[in-house]
Length: 96
Image (cartoon, rainbow, N blue to C red):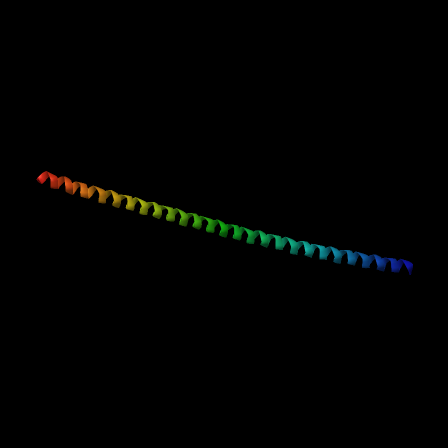
C-alpha cells in the first residue's frame, strides 16, 4: 500500500510539475508576445515621429524660402523705385 501511495504521490507531483511548467511556458509566451507587439508599436510610433519631424522640417524650409523670396522681392521693388526716378530725371535733363 505504501508503495502504491508513493507511486500515486509521485504521479501527482509529476502532473503538478508538468502543469506548473505549462503555466510557466504559457506565461513566457504571453510575455514574449506582448514584448513583440510593443516593439511593433514602438517601431510604428518612431516611424510616425520621423514622418512628423520630416514634415515639420519641410514646412520650416518652405516658410524660410517664402520669407527669403518676399524679402528679395521687397528689395527689388525698392531698387526699381529708386532707379526709375533717376532714369526719368536723367532723360528729362537730357532733353533740356
